[in-house]
Image (cartoon, rainbow, N blue to C red; front, side, top):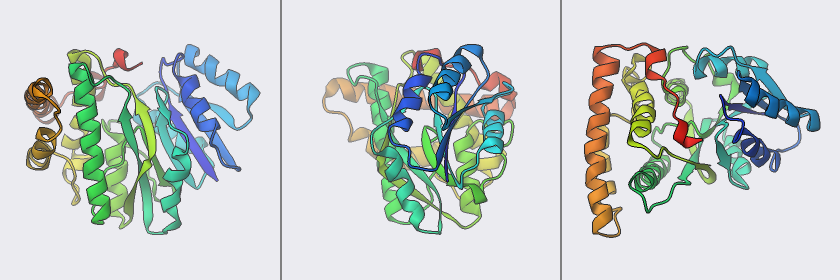
Length: 293
C-alpha cells in the first residue's frame, strides 16, 4: 500500500492543486493524507475527503513541520510513504517514476526532481533555476556512481520499515531522513522523471528565510556528524562553483550568478551565526515564507 503524506499550513489556495495532481495518478490501494492545523486549509481538505474516500485529513497540533510529519506517519497505513508539500504540484507520471526504483530491495528511499516554476527573467527566478538544475546534476551524478544523495523534501518516497521519528527541532527533515536511511545501509535512488513544480521566493528576505532554514539543518548535529555527507558550505564551493559558472547564457545572467555567490556566502554566515554559535530555537529559525504560495 502507498501513502501520500502532504503537509500544509495556511495554504487553502494551493493545497487543492497539490491534492488533484496526486489523485490523477494514484494507484489502487493507495491513500492520500493531508496534515494541516488551520481551519482554512482543513476546510479545503475535508471537501476533497467528502468527495473522494482515499483522501483523509490529519489534524496537526501546530508545533512545526517535523511534528506534523510524525503525526502523519502515525496515521499512515502504507508500506511506502510519499512525502510532499501543500504548495507544490507533481507533474503527470511523477508518482509511477518515483515508485519504480523500489523494485530493488536495497533502495530505502527515492528522491524526485524539483523544477522551478519561477521565471528565469528575474534575479531570484534565475537563482531558483540555477540551483534546481545544479541539484539535479549533482543527484544524477551521485546516483549513477552509487553514491549517497539527499532526497528533496518537495517530493520523495521512503520504505516505512526504515523510517524513524523525525526530531521535533529538525530544520531539514528531508536531510535527517536521508542520512538515517543511508546509515542503515540502504541506498537512496533518484528518479529525475518524477518532477515536481515549485514556486520559489520572490524577495531576498524570503529567500534568506527559506535557505537559512534548509541549509541550517545541515549544521545541526543530526546531519553534521553523520558519516555520509552531500552538502555543506565547503562542498558547495568545491563542487558547485564550476556548475554555476557554466549556467549563464549571457552577461546579465553571469552577473546574477556572481550575485548568487555573494548571497550564498551571506546565507552560510547566517547559518554559522544563528545555528552553530547562537543556537537559536527552532521557532525562531522556522519562519513562514509567503511569496512561495
